[in-house]
Length: 317
Image (cartoon, rainbow, N blue to C red; front, side, top):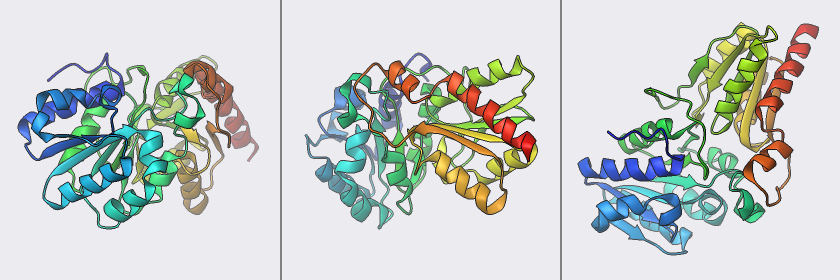
């Protein structure tokens, strides 16, 4: 097994799916003329007879993937997140979600950290769109190590998946092994005063914020909620009851993603002070990834401030 820690999540996907193809002849990979960017080029090099280049026809790629699934294959269809969501949503809904087709959509370049590519390429609605679809599992890995385990789980689990990866290299959260379990959150740090629930690139920022908060006497729990659907309700409710204050952080619109799911659960089962960090109902301009994150408050300091705010609300109850 290779060491994936120094890779971007998209490169970890590309290398791991090529490796899985060595032992599973039913895996096929489709791409929409972006294999050098999505990193499916590694599968194409290793298994050219099972790689299908669909060109700039994402809708057609989804139809082909659904057809392959109906024949017993395990298709992984890959393109940029903005195209995997808005450009071919009808085909995904009709050909994958409704028949519960065994198709894995792995989308790279998610969120605003595509940076200089601008708003046309920034997928900020995709998690909400895929969470709306019955039968889909929706996953946002925290780093390259977890990405490898997510890809393995998707290959072994029947049914539709949407896996959202990034463009840039994200800090390593799992320095050693990652015990990914579909539908189960991972507690990265214990804490009794407040809880940060994050996924994707925001997980490492949550860990940094928790470290800073500890210096001022706030013991903060950190949870990696990589599986957005089905969400780990038990872990969220335990956090609410045991810490009494929650902050969510995600690289997605505030409505429709992780924060909305957590808010709905808490409102119905365990009302708890909640602050949510995300993209505030705007399409972001072109810019360097870290600058765009700073503008939206998607930083360790932004999480730090949100924890302080939710702690004040907790004390005033």
